[in-house]
Length: 410
Image (cartoon, rainbow, N blue to C red; front, side, top):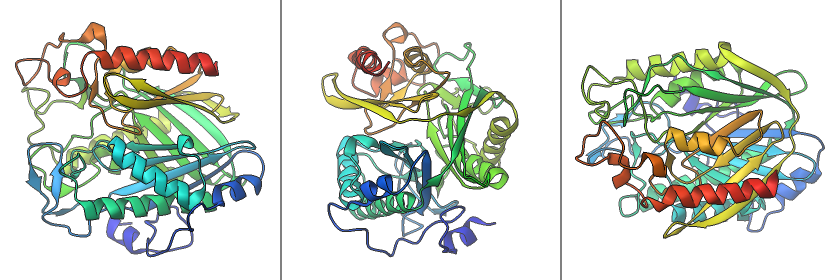
């Protein structure tokens, strides 16, 4: 089914469909979340997908490389929400097809979602997949009208996900993908290419939603691309949805130093020459590995616990751990390097573990102390990742914060 047809279709079912947003959200201080939590028992999941594509296809300021304007939209970028409820708690995870979302933007969106649903702000997790081919989002460059529409549509997605809650069982899987990626800071080092997924099936074994987690910059398409797109993530989700049904929701992981394999023999940061065919091949190959080449699979018993903390690294940001029983998710606000993600995984008991970067804030790269200024390949005189972020104190501050959260939970 073409993306245009998918965008135009409006049905009562949120799956495979971009929901029309010409609706009013529930009024301020809604009790929707409380009503839905009390209206059922056991593990329940709901999901929804809403377009957040700019209304103008051309002339949109794009983020990720030097300033450029869009000439069109290749695939409908979206806000995808999954709501997970047990007998005691309810959480919402929202994935935006954007490069990032700042703390001020997160606070605005959380406030709107809270008023429309009654969800606790600490149980709302807002993630950006980090596509470099989306609308500008960083402070001073984001379009106010676009932001207003994005907030409204993402809030509506959360409302619809809540309303679609149904009983499910969870199946967790993990493995190693064979897609070609590169550690762009240190190309001689192997990339682990770990993936995790969790599939939620209803009582008739129909897939409701699938969480997908992998670590790689969505930059198959480089600076010459001027079409709005979710990059390889679009093709990954489409392939998973075509195979399993339901809604595929992607959350990027320890992506800070991981790129798709270099184009030619040049600098691994240089994405010039990337094409949509390459993005399609990458996304579909990753989907095939997730669907068929997992090395571990378990039917998961899920209970919900969350802990959140404020961290001071010179500025204040927030970190969280979402414990789902068999699976734990460490949620952090920037682009962690792969080794930092591995350090965070060691704090989690497992057996399934997810690191989710780019969540609830954007603070730049998270470079571990022992990797600081130790890159062997960079397109700047100094290591690039060290120049974009809050400084060397970030990783140690976040690591200590996560240690304390883990002590509280486990």
